Amino acid sequence: MSDLLQCDDTKPLVVLFHGLSSSPLEFNFLSSQLISAGYRVSTPSIAGYSFGGNASSWKHWVNEAVSHVKALQETESQPISLGGISLGSTLALAVATELNDILGVIALSTTLKYNGWAVPWYRSLIPLGMALGLGDYFKHKEKDPFGIKNHQIRAYIKRVLSSQDTSAVGGLYMSLRHMYEGNKLCKYVIDNLSSVSSSILTIHAIDDEIANSYNAQLVADLSSATYLRQIYLGNSYHMITVDNERETVAAETISFLDLIYGKIKPTPDEEKVLAPELQRFLRNLNRIDDSI
Image (cartoon, rainbow, N blue to C red; front, side, top):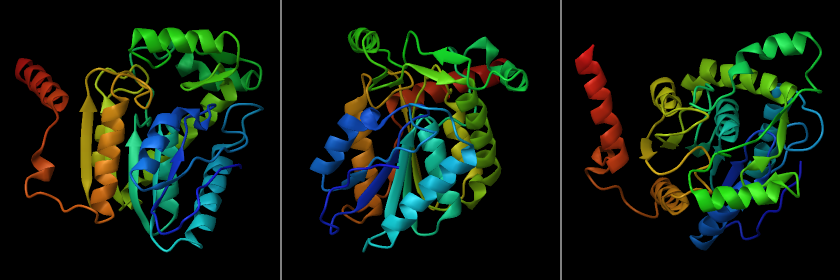
């Protein structure tokens, strides 16, 4: 596991886990914004989870992530917060089930179930592929829309991946074994979310093509969060740290951290504030309920 961590432990520390078979490049913008706001950021890579090489087991991912955070806790004067995007959010929640004194969890595009509109049809055949010994040989290649709704950014990502294996939205491909172990991690977190009592922020795109907004609701329903704030975005796909609303993601993340670290005081109606896209989502949901 490698990581570059800023000095000055008087500033709160946030550990961010990137998505499966990807890299910390996913957090370039968010990390810069957090550092400017007075936070330190750790973005570890985990062998067998990050892009490059064969996949290791989901238990190895969790053990490595827990060890990394535990070692940091021993030197920190303030509680650590965790975060992640996609399966990195799921990994952050897994760490929070294992460790005490995690102040907050920033769950971005949380992936507990792969149920978005662009999920490959063959995901249900992953166990069969593993049984046939294809785990390290079959590779799912990333393609349009690359988790990006913005056409200009998407075109840029496509150009980058035509000449190199990693970009700000992930690696060029993902092995069947990565996907198989990722499914196991999702099941573990679903089964153990009730033990997560940290404050939680979920930010999820309504049009997420990999993991629909039901995933954010699962976090709300199954966790034991002491404080929960949920934000829904209406102009992004899965990679919300890179897409159209990356500034909103950064601002909401900083606001959440400022609140739980006591830099600002909550307003009386804070939990009643609904983002416009959440209002739209709830209106559509009510229409569906009324028609049944």
